[in-house]
Structure formats: structure tokens, C-alpha cells
Length: 151
Image 1 (cartoon, rainbow, N blue to C red):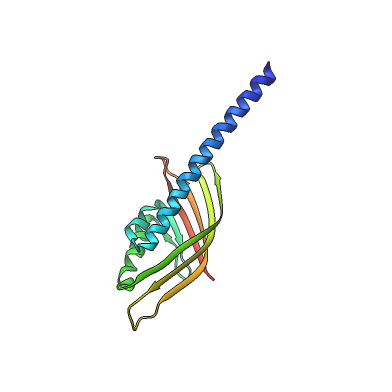
Image 2 (cartoon, rainbow, N blue to C red):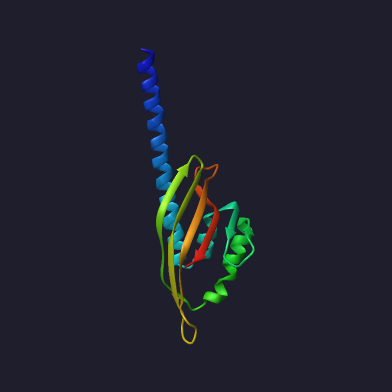
């Protein structure tokens, strides 16, 4: 009897963990779609909304941006540089997503192209991106850390 009870409890706990894992994966997939949509629309406000308040952005060639306020200010600083630009594509080919409780990490290959009116040249980039995500108190997932490199 004890063995059956132990097996039943073990299966029930495993089922709950799998269900929570499925819910977490769906929420992270939704965050990734929002991440791409914000990029495609060059919507800095939507991009900033994806960050945890204590998030850290490790941009190539820059000092770390610590905190959502600094990340938002940096995103806003891009607006004049992008004036007249049209996003041709912004994609991330996620290679691996791992979820461990309230923390997840994922990495992928990102590609982006922005066309500008002449005489300004188009920007085209490709690189690797790493996100560490953290489940918030309200159950949502936010970016805790981003790091990326160019090709």
C-alpha cells in the first residue's frame, strides 16, 4: 500500500511540475513574440516593458545598463538615430530554452535589417543573443539580463 501511495504522489507531483513547465514555456514563448514584435515595430516603449525593474543589459562596447530606467533611457536615445528608418526584418532563431523554476535562459541567432532614406546606408546585423528571464511576483516573465554579440 505504501509503495502505491508513494508512486501516486510521485506521479501527481511530476504531472504538476510538467503542467507548470508547460505554462512557463507558453509564457516565455509569448514574451519572445512580444520581443520580436517590439523590435519589428521599433517600439521602444514595448521593448522596455519586457524588462524586470532590476534588469541588466550588456551591450557590446558599452558599460552595463543596470535597471529598467537606464535601459528605457538608452532605448529612447535610439529614436533620433532611427528617424526615417524602416525595419525590413528582425528575427531571433531561438536555439535553446531552459526553464529552472522561476529562472529561465535562452539563446539564439538574431538578424536585423533597417533601411533608411538616402544618403544614409542601411543597417544590417547578425549575432548571438542570450536572455536570462525571471518569473515576477505576478507570474509574468521579464528579462533579467540580456547579452548579445555581433557575428
